[in-house]
Length: 138
Image (tube, rainbow, N blue to C red; front, side, top):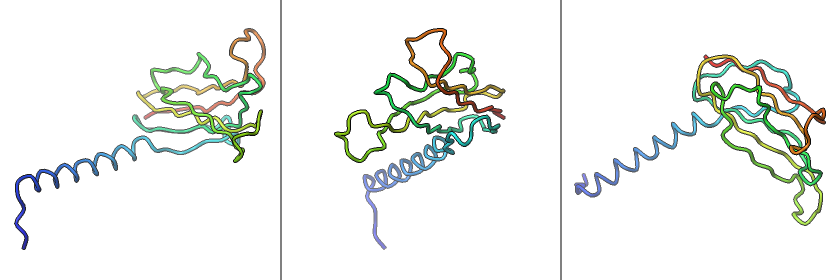
């Protein structure tokens, strides 16, 4: 059929390799999203599996979701946190939205993800809300 030159073959191999890498990376980093309805659930993960927690938030009030120091970061690691307003009108002042917090299982073991909804600068005050997920990493 068509004869491929060496640069074309190299390009072809690189494209296939990159596509494979994107597929594998997507499988490792994509995971289930948990919401307030999942509070206190027990979940099992494999090492390198990722999960997301999506909770209502309104940082204009000074409150935000904060990871408790009781969560064992050697078992499950916080990888990112992102806030998005739920209002389609970006001009709405004080509109609430959602925090999406992503975690990755890094080692076998048991821990609990504990998120508290509070003002991070206030100490010794009960949080407005608490979210927990009991994690077992196999």
